[in-house]
Length: 53
Image (tube, rainbow, N blue to C red; front, top):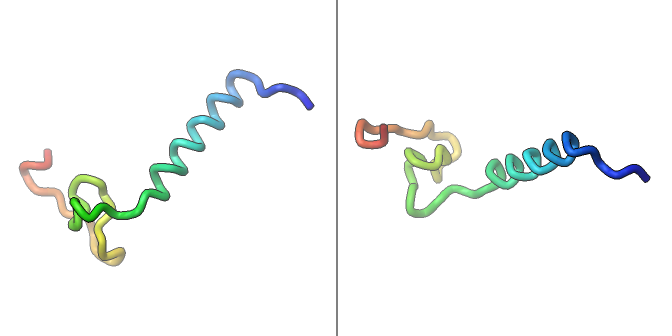
């Protein structure tokens, strides 16, 4: 089996990082999802206030 090229290794690392971020559950410290983008209620759209900018 061939070793992965640096480009394929980089793509694999990025894909793994994205997978970890996407699979992270909502945070109890951010129930509205304004910081994490993942509200506790999955049907609710994240809210961003002026102080979040």
